[in-house]
Length: 243
Length: 74
Image (cartoon, rainbow over all chains, first blue to last red; front, side):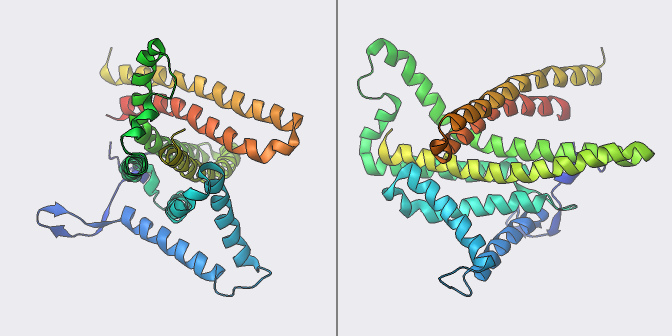
């Protein structure tokens, strides 16, 4: 799988600084480098946005306010006032994934969201956190999530296993969605880019296609970050409000 | 049949499932357009649901795609 050339080579994890701690390989890899870069980008964006705080926002401040209000509105709309205490987490998640996706679109860069282990860690964290919040706020009543009030018994026999299954498949689908989108997009870009040189003069056609697909991928990067944050808030809403 | 050829055919067959996801995403956004043009005042509110439906229906297509990639690369 780890080919030197070919569309999958861009996903290889290469250690930059080899660190070995008690038999565990915790090297600083290119994946970790781009995670650090994503955090630095987020920090510097909001540092620039909040440096000169004015009533009438300047250009950078508008960008910061736009993103802030976009996610704040989403959380408020889906979870309500009680959900605003989870807003910093959702916003951090959104910015981290957004910069991961967008930085990955730069040529020769690395997309850490195209590795399912990164997404799985994020999704499992959300899943466990939501479960704990649900049990903490509702106690054992939280199990009502699997069997809504007033369900007739014959329906409940079918409904409860389906609800339980859909609850436990959440982290899988959440992480797989982001992973597959990023993987498919980057493989497509690489395959199309391979045609540009090999077709000679007619390489103009795949070149235009690559440009168009890059635009599409920017949109996908934004949408997937939004969808990840949106689904997290919706799961949170289940935990806070029980349907 | 050689193993390599069988893998290629299998991956191609697995990718057929993406058709369903394409149809689903089309239906979601098509109906969003219909709803937004019938009642433009609900446009912003409906957008959230449109993207939610898009994400959920797209996921099923991506499962097929991931299976195809697993068949191809392992």
